[in-house]
Length: 281
Image (cartoon, rainbow, N blue to C red; front, side, top):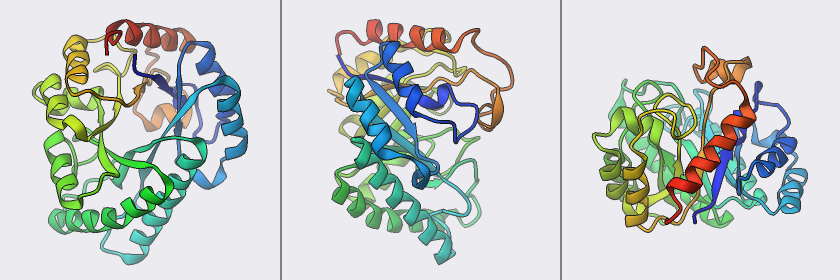
């Protein structure tokens, strides 16, 4: 059975909310993995967080997002440098937490269209990633590029686009991060897309088409679980469910109404569904 995790921002209303108590909350509900949002990696108390993980016998995964002021695709060398510095801090933070991967928008800013000068931006992304993978290797972490939907980015929307960048960077420390919410918008068939990713799949977010817990929408979960099994995926299954409209987290993720009556119950439903659906994987 693959390790099952939850993104800790499920319980956050502000991005700086304390993550330490949320690790225990995830553990009590049956999760093996706590996923950390490394948006401000320099402000986290890594010894405290790692101590809590070790105390509970849990694992970590990590994600981040670049922004317009820290963007490795930018034509401005100072903005690119800020993006590389952010990735370095995140990769070092992931290593301190024991996470094997750094997923998310690791290759371009979140929510920003790069269509202007798209070709040069893509070229700069690849050049920057060729440097970033050496930092990843030094820290024993794999960078995973999340393919996001057209409303949150335009550089990597599909598995095919991600694989093309991986082919040009040519490093074992660069893989794909797939998310069923985004795939539901961009891919013709989720199972086929996962099989296309194959050995290059490094991280998987499991969430419904409506961002509710798995099993409460129309994602074809049997097709997903069978494809995961067929490619011999060995990473984590992380429930990245966002159902709470409260605070800057809810607004930042475009959650405009309550999608669950109880956050803990939504989490409990997620881990129960994933354990059942992926039981033979």
